[in-house]
Image (cartoon, rainbow, N blue to C red; front, top):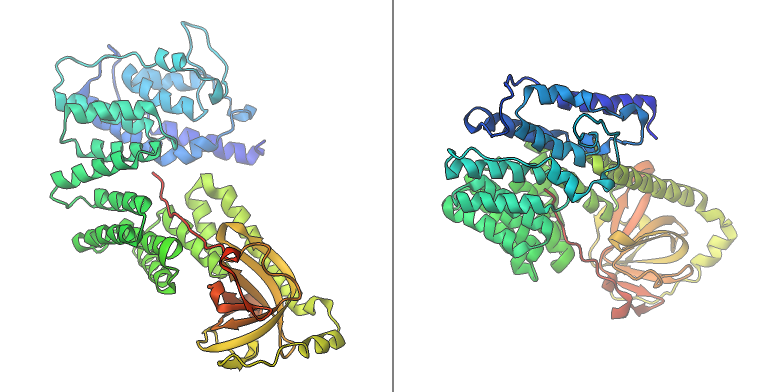
Amino acid sequence: MLTNQQSTTAQDQLDDFLSHLMPLDVTLTTPVLDFKDHSNQLNTWIDLVYKYKDQLQKLDIKDTELRYQIKDHQQIIDVVQPIMVIMIFEVLIRFNTLTKPFQKSQIQPIYDIRNITESDLDSISTHQLDFTLSNKQKSFYYYLRGKLLNALDAFHQGALDNLTMAVKLDPEAIQAWITLGQVFWKKGDLLASKQCFQWVLNFTNQTDLESLTLLAMVERRLAINVEGIDESLRLCKKCLGLDITYTNAWVGIGNSYMSRYFTFTKDPIDLKKSLSAFQKAQDLGCVNPDLFLSRSIIYRYLDEHTKAIEDFRILASLDGQLKSQCLSSIEQSKSFLSQLNNAIRTKLDFTSTEILNYTTSFSTKSFGFVEATVGDLKVGTTPKTIVKLRIMGSLSRHQEIATSSFICMDTKGDFCGMTVKNVGPEVLHIGDLLVINSPVKLILEDSLVVLRVDDPRSLLVNATPLAADQMTWLEMKVESSF
């Protein structure tokens, strides 16, 4: 249940949305679409639906404060041609903000979107087109209708049907092809999606920036080897050759290098290039949620929790549907830092005698590399250097990024955190003696020291290398949404 303050805010958002639908001065005469006078206004309204859809989807129809009656929408009916009302109604119904369509003079109460039937939708979708419209004009109408239905996050058959009709009526309708490609993506038909974007590029001599970045996204999703990711990179770089300030291309490059790392190479240079591209997009003023979602995942994977928290906060402000997930991730990172701080500060309540005894249990065997303690290491990677640690306690495991976290002690009795990537959940245990080759040292907030192990092959556990079946290599498909 929303609080009164939250309800008022949500209601104000809906009022604000509806207020944008009012300025048109139209005399109601016929349900025939007046293309010349009203198609552009209708397109503007649909853009408003996209702008406000997050707020509309968050409205809770179970709250009495938000139970709108049909009379609240009557003012729209009074000033807008019925065909336009039909299209707006279809969106409002799906966003839980409109009463059930009235039958004759009977006013029905608001009801849950799950109770809407196909016949309900059909009953408000009866319309006809002016027979004098050209095929290009009819195509634009079907494009607008498909564009409206595509405002829904999930695939909608009506969007596919209307956009298919649009491109049949006008094969040169570029925006209809682009939107149709997005609909096929939602349906899961990536090859059809790819064909739509390729058609636009063929028609525009490979210069349409939006289609280039969308095609790059499809190539990234279809990639079965690193060459597929490189094709995605090529398309994004081609965009930047046309417009170096096109932020979605920079985001696409960031996501491509991110996919390259997590799915194929595990080369840290790819993650650095990904972060560099994301930063360039942000410097250019990009507010694409994909940027902050992808970068927050990288920061979390790299144990840079403070930066991850900042990106999760930005993402929550940009995408209302991800707000709950972002807040949960923020709390997880804060909890990890708090547990780490407490464990290192208290040394897990081990006595000085116990710690001294543990330091004498380390192997004196030389492994052919320079041996260092945690305090000897510089921040970052120290190549051709080993650190010996004993696992003293376990913190947590983040399955989504294949990371296990521990509290460890080095040969001097100093405590630190350790995160190990790409290792199965039951491989490492309290008491294990570890040798880490070329460790990565991080200094987190409050001067917390953490060693990160990205490649489990650089790890010896009780003097033994890990077996292949003990490694769980993280593969991550970096996806965008429409």
